[in-house]
Length: 339
Ligand SMILES: *Cc1c(COP(=O)(O)O)cnc(C)c1O
Image 1 (cartoon, rainbow, N blue to C red):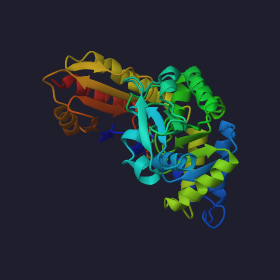
Image 2: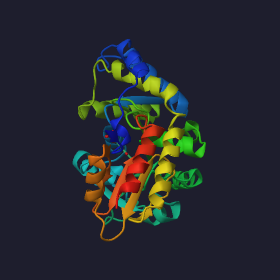
Image 3: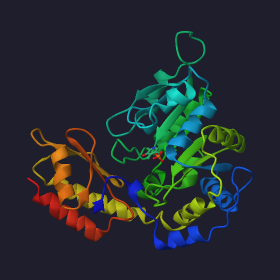
């Protein structure tokens, strides 16, 4: 099977597994596991931020950030496609008593001028005070699109002027950095905290990192424990993260060029109505009236290719570490055969 459902399906390479097997570990709840600590400090250094916290998932890193920065009854401003709003099981409300205010276009982009009128202070008793502004880069539901760094700076300025913390869900931030030739420090300088996933394009089996100031990480560590995310000999997992940060970032460019090949093939297919512009490793496309996404999914599955239907007409393919150029050629061949 060639699995294009997500970049979360990757399995560790032999080299990564070797690093995991030989990791030095300790009890990371009682004290520090040396390998977890190495990963946290390595990531903090890369982003020019003070500290980091290793967590089981990107949902948890996001949920911790929401929890630390807000009080119940606050409102969080984010894009209408944001993971924190659409795909975290109502966690913002359940864990932290928050409501969400959304804006933005159909491609995961949002501007400072859209956000400005949405900010609520404490003055008006009718309004829920804005507790956090959260961005997502790349945008998953937007089609793997990259936010503009200058716009992110403008939004950051707006947040700072209003005394509102500024979070980045950077589950696939490294895809954006590679695609746009930007550096982690560009982002570390703008955001109060950043969540990055090691288990997506970077190819680790498990794990996400939450980056921020030392004080923020002390508070985040308490919330991680409360959410049940304190992991003991997690160094075995952190070792995979260290390996990925050293070896799996630049290669994301291959995933991006593979996604472009899929985009080009789909754009010539008579059943395809539109494709969200491909900037990184996600290809979201819409079928014309009379075609059925489930049917496409089933036909491809019969031919050894797994993809995901996002609605009756929308389909998603994600390229990653375990999809080769040979695989891409096979996929294109199969797509051309569907009628
Ligand atoms: C995958 C993802 C997450 C976190 O997902 P987990 O499966 O909980 O690690 C967060 N944000 C975005 C944009 C994602 O795509």
